[in-house]
View 1: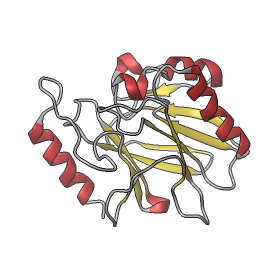
View 2: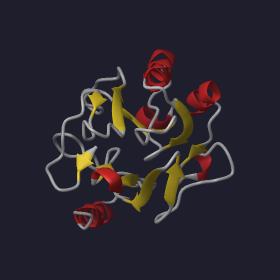
View 3: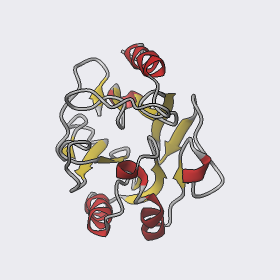
View 4: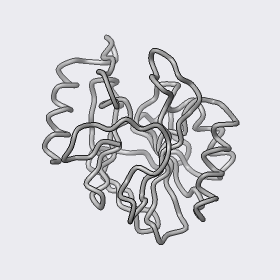
Length: 192
């Protein structure tokens, strides 16, 4: 998650939105590599007083990690009600179908091939669950299907691989496009 008015953070698991609100909790997938840095950030996002949560990027197909995400939500008194994907790379999306099976949730994504359920995501959509509001921000560049999720209540943006905690993301042809990526960074900057 990137604070909209500050420099990108370095998520390593734990509560990362304001301590009084605790809207966003990060569960780090155990898939550290040169491409994933410390591992994929899986986000559990909810209103503090709601029992419903949204999970963003369940991560790789790793049952231990997927069950850890569910356990973290349950420990906080939350039930996963919806799964969202920032993009279709395996380290973010490969576990989505299994996660949906474990939680009974739909999976919403920009790419129709990644969706489980009838509803996808489109630029400008507002996703609401249990009082939580997430705004869908199109951020192509890293991939053509990259999205970010603006959390206005915390003035924060969950960026997937569009903005990393350190270093720069990969923009690889033919799916990634540098011009689109630079436009996406400008779009994110406009949220501050």
